[in-house]
Amino acid sequence: MIQLALRMYHVPEVIQVMLDDYFSGFRMRFSTNNYTTNWINLEVGIAMGCTISPILFVMAMEVILKATEGSGGPANLGGGCSMPPLKAFMDDTTIICSKEDEARRMLTRLDDLMLWCIMEVKPKKSRSQSIRRGKVDEATTFTVAEQQIPTVSQEPVKSLGRWYDSSMKDIRRGAETLELVSESLLAINKCGLQGKFKIWCLQFMLIPKLLCPL
Image (cartoon, rainbow, N blue to C red; front, side, top):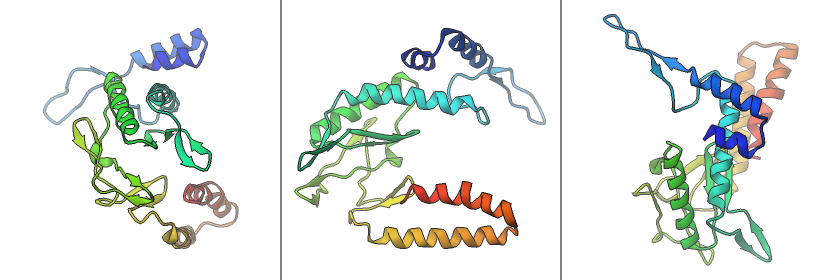
């Protein structure tokens, strides 16, 4: 999958060979007080602490999402407005469709591609919501990997710093953001940092954390 993504994004062949050699040498073993296992080749997952792995993961996910996008058209929001059927950040993926059958088709396609890449969709960590004529439709549910996805009404979900529930309202979002700012500023003050170190925490830790919910 990595090599496919590298070719699709026109990465020079010399870099492809270099990355292939780099990842082909990943091995690990476990040791206990009584024994040590043999060396095992790592073939699945992201190497912790490796700066290249997250970039390659995003590239591979983009290939998967592009292949899934063709299963459904843009979501019609009314008034001549539409939006792409897929939104993603790393492996946090949202499917938005105007029609129920399109959503089911895209879910099936996404699941097939994930299995082909030796990955899996986790239905219990996913959420679904169907809206008909401006109201939440509790009767419509979706499945993936032969398991039902819980609805947002059953279990609210937090995605990219925001909570989503069946109310479909943003009234609480302002108060939640103020709470986050207050708690974060108190935490920074308790650290005892001074001058430029405190400014660094505000600029590179707190502000990026606030941009997602805003």
